[in-house]
Length: 136
Image (cartoon, rainbow, N blue to C red; front, side):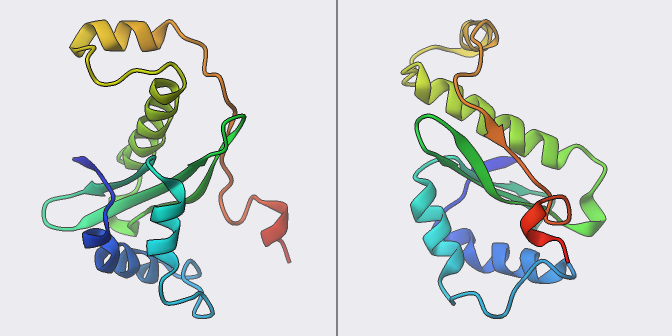
């Protein structure tokens, strides 16, 4: 289940990031996750599995462009579409915020309206190994 990330999720998000080899950087500030969630001001979500958080996405909407600062899925939960679901949730939120949806549209009507709108922003997404700044 996808939920809005909050400060209550920070310990579990940190544990998730530290569980993936090469993801966590010990030089990061102790409050890096809290700052990321606060800076995102909205499109930041966790994916809860049976009892744990197994996915996290943090996006930043700059108005003219949006980007993902973090996208991670636990090793044992990969290839199940969790990352795809998290990114789609971010895209839905970005489109909804661009067109002023306030939650008053319900169910099929909202999905139908969103499906007919072209995304107004480009969502940039790089895996750490794919992004030029992470190459050796």
